[in-house]
Length: 214
Ligand SMILES: CC(C)(COP(=O)(O)OP(=O)(O)OC[C@H]1O[C@@H](n2cnc3c(N)ncnc32)[C@H](O)[C@@H]1OP(=O)(O)O)[C@@H](O)C(=O)NCCC(=O)NCCS
Image 1 (cartoon, rainbow, N blue to C red):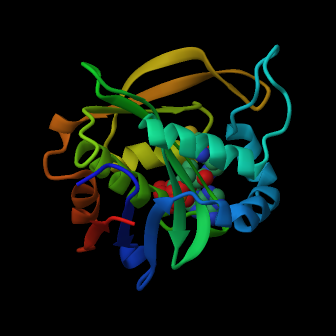
Image 2 (cartoon, protein in one colour):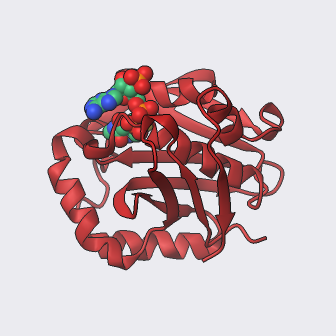
């Protein structure tokens, strides 16, 4: 089984009976939905969005440039850029970044969701599926998630997943126009032998999931 491209899907359980969340490679055809979502959700996303530090290339990134760059990184195996769909509608992104092989077998994960889909447990399930995939087909060993201390919604995601806090990184990333402190969370393969989605859903419902290749 190869790590990329891949399609991951599961039901949303009792929070949204009959609904499904699906992850698949971000594609050029997402352009309109992506731009609409980013526009409608500007105020919701800006406090958590990465920005360009002083001296960097401040030209605005178009969606095409973003996808081109992510696809190139995906071909090199350093990034897995997922689009999140809820019942077939574009709902956000989960990106596996900074894949390091060798003796590290490490990656970090970032995510955002259209506010219209917030509060239904979409992102905990999406991140659980992605981490299971990272520890499975992608054969990674450790996944890290960095969250601003003010981001209570995102802190709930790692809390629901039982991902351990491992430290505090002052001025870690350039977010919303300045260097921002982050709380660091990490999980290793040994910590969830049963799978993170199974662990998450065991406490909530009996949701089934499966993965297939595009
Ligand atoms: C963080 C984020 C991905 C969470 O996704 P989600 O699928 O809504 O996650 P959950 O459904 O588990 O909700 C998490 C918390 O958000 C809050 N929340 C719930 N519904 C909400 C809504 N409609 N609007 C705003 N916040 C809501 C609740 O505090 C919830 O915790 P609870 O379930 O204990 O009540 C989403 O809030 C988001 O995209 N935020 C903006 C971008 C961002 O912060 N990215 C992460 C950077 S580290």
